[in-house]
Length: 409
Image (cartoon, rainbow, N blue to C red; front, side, top):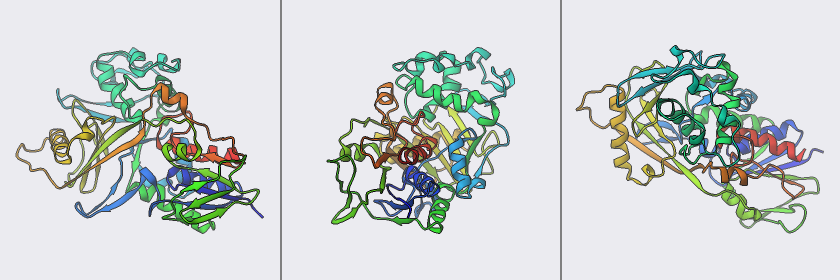
């Protein structure tokens, strides 16, 4: 009889752990407090706009090997789309200049692949790769055009943190797995239809077919932490008693995991603001499904049929403004980027504030991240906030699920 693995939390970390648990020979039960899986990677129908919206816009890279393996595992590897080469189109809203960053197979990039006003030396981030635990990104990179047109747009979105505070060591680890592996690891990818259609629905279908149990509206309210192992899980008035060889993975956000287990964990967060605007256009400048912006409120534009979406990371100040004001600011950037007539009216929109989008990815946070293993023999942790070696990203969430199963196996 196989061991029983109980996974609390059906975000990407929990889904990844469930799939890996099945492969490791466990019988799997997955518990989710809300009515749907996916966590911060969910999609939902928006009645105002009449479309399916993603909770957040996510730009993946072909170097995200754990994520691509996850998609292959659930048969969804063909649901991402992107250019056949590594190409990141940008537009400077202030000057009107446009360019495409094109990482090559060798460093440094040639002049044709660089941003205007930058040199080859600007693309050699060696200080990030050798940074100490207290170093911040801004102190390890050249100032000027390269910072404003290359590193800040790329790394703020990846770390969701102002570069003056962001951990240089985390940035260096990210670059080792993407930029420094050449063009084949830097090709940008986005979900063709929705995050749910790529990451969540196919995973649930695979779990159901494999006999896993998925229970929604099951909020963990307690667990026994007084001995060397966890003896039960409490969901309101219901207790799930654990057999001697049962195992648990808490795939919860850091706050509830810390509260349940009494662990010292990083709890400061950074917000992300996304805007969704109902407008149908033929395409974005640069010819791709996304466009990076410099010099505005919006940092990235994403196009899907009938919809333009924006993302602004590390949006502490912006997130405090009313939705109507945010929409006006973002629409100004969209209208300029698309060269729309000055009298073009603000279209129907939806502003989504994810105020706790990621942990504040500072050096202090990096030192506090907890690994998958715990001192409870049958309990492991998963989540993008755990110590996966990467910033809090989709890749980190998926990797954490694997690491948690390995810790129990």
